[in-house]
Image 1 (cartoon, helix red, strand yellow):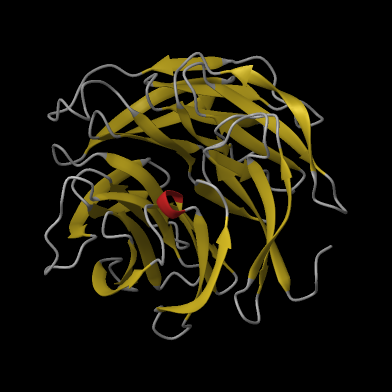
Image 2 (tube, rainbow, N blue to C red; image 1 turned 120 degrees about the vertical axis):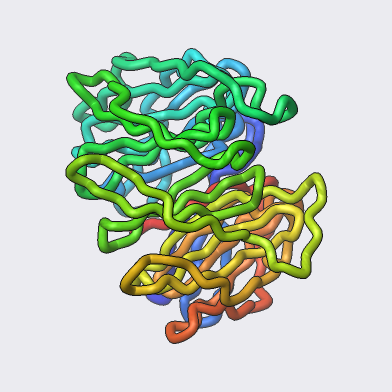
Length: 350
């Protein structure tokens, strides 16, 4: 099934439950060609997916009015998925799922519901009954997008007990800790009004956190103290080039730091591109270096895979591959694309 020169990855989509909506695919690391191996049905709109640290269980959210979080066992030989059941999120449109650092809890954020959840992980990887359901309160300055709370991601910080939640509706990053299965709020960090914080990326050195802000198309650079759990904003950088005049459909989406810690990438919808920033090794500050058109529309999510970047273009039903130049960080288009209906999340298999 898997060739020696291939990397496997799963793709979450906006697809109906009666059709394959999570796809298993492969990337050829010699030329960037991709292929679809198989798919899994039984879950509608799995818009965000993640694997546990042992690559034995895949967790997905079902983004719909009555949200659900689901677990699937991963076959060690074929990498096929088998359902392990699901749990209600008691909130609408869950859009992010993660696993706590100790692997004992699965965490979910519900965009429209305005709430976040924690579930214990059973020995077989399935989800136990919900142990925490926290609903945010308040609103932001934009009535069209910030009429209420909209937690967009829930991010366990590598190597610590801190859990950071980006709330797009409140312009805040909320810092939680898990205490006996309960998500307990410790402090809040404010972003500029109308920023719309969406996703986070952690620098490998553990001293910097980068936040992509959906509504004002910026990246905010924070210094981070993992002991105290404090974030201090240092810089706000546009994700769009100076010459570009943004329209109403221009929103920032995903963000990742390269494993080497030298490059940061951020995706733009509308301009349909991935921005490259160079990271100063001393300060962590960003310098814009390049913008690469993704070869599709609405790159909601992308992933870095062993020197490659894969962009999920939701609006054009395709995934495109790029080689990452090791010296400059620039993305080199391969010309290869994989047709997948409404791809919105890529989870590489390590």
